[in-house]
Image 1 (tube, rainbow, N blue to C red):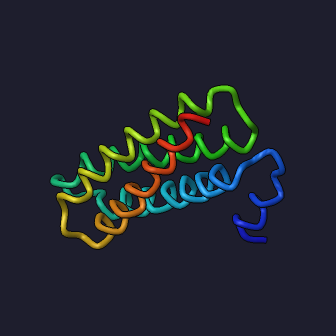
Image 2: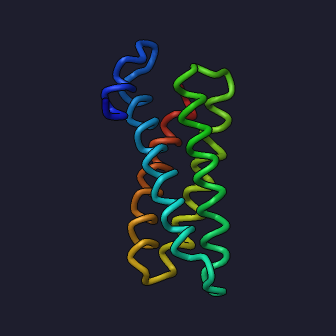
Length: 118
């Protein structure tokens, strides 16, 4: 079963929350990839560090939304801010993994910002 199919079975979620869970999980995966690719390159240390933080935050936020946590809105704010900062760092680098990551993180930040009011 795909993530989309699984998330669609969580009945308390709105469509926007389902989409946010999916993009948060995508962001976590792409950040892990980007961080791994950046390892060993001194110029990419900050990118790797930010990516690792975002991977943890986005996966945690997805889990909080899935269980309808009372702390989801506050975590959405932290998640959006971290995504924006990391996307900015990734955009500074020409590497394909950084460019892909920046694109996903921009979308994730927007989705998380939408969750701050729910």
